[in-house]
Image (cartoon, rainbow, N blue to C red; front, side, top):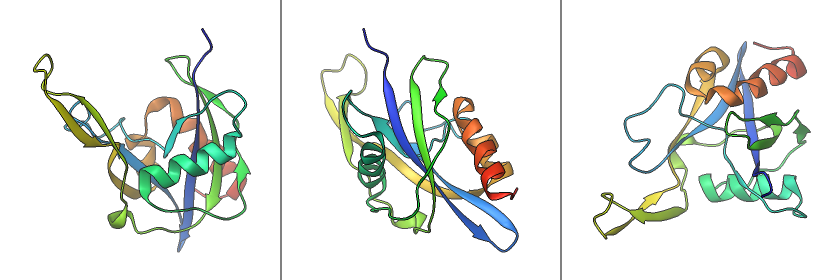
Length: 155
């Protein structure tokens, strides 16, 4: 069985002296009461043969409703504890975190109820200074923050 691969975008902006990154919180009942250590860069799975950057842009659009353009900087792919490999690109930009609109997914909820419910793939987005982002982000993705800091020379 082939390992799963995801592609995502680490959107960043500079506000005064601060480097800030845009992260999303996963939707659905499993994540509803989780905060620190549960946020992610906007990302999603892609198939072998698909261009990873094109997939990252598509996933960003699906999870936020925003189309991102700019000078994309390839980051070092990170292997997650699950074995999944995440490819990511950093790009400078700005979106209104309050205005994101995510696509939805369906699942049986409550479990074994036989009822399908629809949930947003992402229930909120936010801008975070690097120190706060390190707390919010899934631990397997924090390497992207460190690499972004090296590239920009900011903290």
